[in-house]
Length: 238
Image (cartoon, rainbow, N blue to C red; front, side, top):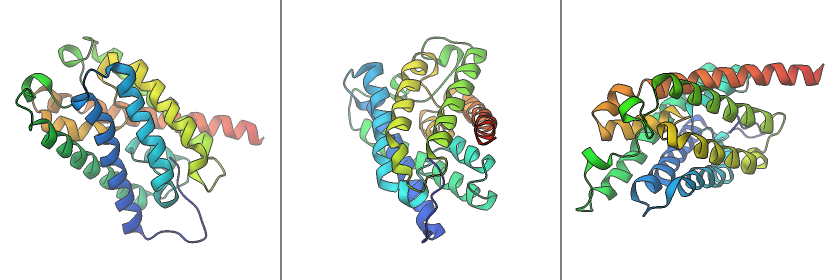
């Protein structure tokens, strides 16, 4: 979400803990549904990600702003809502949270004799042969940059000038749902480097070799979204 501003600012350790827990829960809710859900399909997975983020906004929004995504944190940094030192702490907490969330999903998945990591994976993103639909790197770059830019633009726009990030929970959760409906068939949908790193580490193989794309392209999208926000809101103010 956005940086939380109030009369009583939570201690940094509390903020980072909220981001770590929130990102872990997002991965468990979204990736867990993709890996463990019994034929829930694209709509079910998209709703799992969107509804989990919506719920998290109410839970940790007042504490950390509920970024739970390095691309959102980058957007908040560009928008001047968070300083560089705190942004670095957010990102570190998010990456650790993503890994812990993936570890939980993996620990549950291996409890089934039917689960085969080399076949079933762990919800990792990919392009080419590792793509959900065999999409090229160029197609994945476009969908990740555009989708992340939309997400960051919506986050920054709906939280502009508001101290209560929970006000923006519904539009942001719905936006994440729609973006997953668009991109799941392309690359499994990242729009969040922390969401991609954790599953890639447990999947191994091509997922490790390709995870750079799901760090670089969402971050570029975050920059684009933040840039569009500055242009649009500067025009509105003028």
